[in-house]
Image (cartoon, rainbow over all chains, first blue to last red; front, side):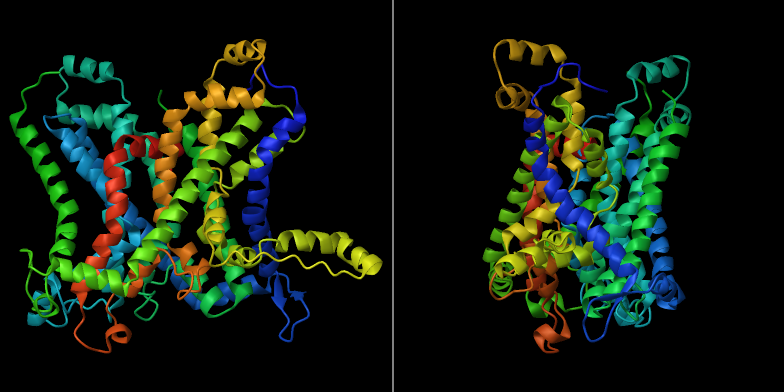
Length: 294
Length: 310
């Protein structure tokens, strides 16, 4: 889409976009370029600039079992949180979309978890799941082995998945409800006149019509789970116990800022960037084209 | 539409009530936790009835987390990001839609690509840029030979430096450097009829006048939505402020980063009884501002989320 009528002064137009271009250059393209540069070079131990090492950093990253571990854990985390939050969000959205009396009140409440700061939710759930105080302390008193996220990696992972899904289900809810309400009322009324009951309409009309939103949410929740999980992991488990909750972004942070291995962290960043770009590209190209019913 | 489906209606309400329960239970447990004493909270039982020490715990958390200063920092940062984003994306979208200049599509795509890679994945080099925001420009001057030339001619060594760590500028700028709002405005400007510009021009309005008196008033709803979303986005930031504010004693940090330090660990309470009650009071104080904000701005919030897809 293009405008027919425009202003003729070219220089004025450039002035308008200059601030953002400068900002994007300084804080987006330069850091991304620097990550690429670091990923292919290694700092000389006694100063004097960086040395070109080709794909060595990547080879080292991929030879590292800990890195594969963090990829595996990120995938587990992404699929578990996507499944949990999307199914809860969708169920609540379908319930609200029936527009029964008083549904506005429910709708307001279901949006709230998204407004709760992720690290605050993390601290809250860390307390709720703490074996020394709260609900779990009762069970732990009777069966000490039952629950201990500070020592058991599976427990810690379960804990961060539940916390993240609690918050993210609200986000899914917002999008699913918007998609459901965008379906023309006439379509649903026509189906009702043909004798389709509520459940039949959900299955044969509403769900197929929101498939694009469904796939959109699937990709978004996977990419979001890579980036938004950091605060929750850092507050709840510090990546522990024994690296059982060390997800990709947490490992980049840890290797880069605690281990001061800039080249290794940069190589990991590049891999993560590629994953994100592939997913985003997939979403734009494939999903937007294939799943379209209108 | 009128249908009689009593059983289904009951089920629908049941689902929604369970949903409300799931939303409120954690929040209620946090509130109850913040009203107990250290001794009470460590009794292994389910605490569902509030105690009487709410205000003491709030005071303790406020003092321990330096929450006055921290919340102020969060507020300045969030206002800065939201305002900066609203203003800058309007300007950029205006320049992209209403002007023709060479490289316009290139600029469009360069900005568009920033949507793909969030701050978290390029965190290490962004930190290096924030430590000296003029590093990119220094490198360009070095590479172009300008530095050497000036050094040879006048003996002055150019060493540009602008440290953004521990400053509001450093907290705000990297979060504005994305395309989120630009596309919202662009889509909107494209739907504004051409006749409006033609009429405005006939009356002698220049670009600035047209932007200020026609486009801005028309896009007020979009601006409110974008402002709400960006305010929350900035308030919720964790990783970036964690890194960008290493000077905790001087500049401090944001309230959200402070959260982790409220959690009782062996190092903070010397192996004593974990005082979760104070931690929960602090948690409550820090999670409240965005909740109130959303309660007042719900309409804009939902609209903005869906429009910006973030």
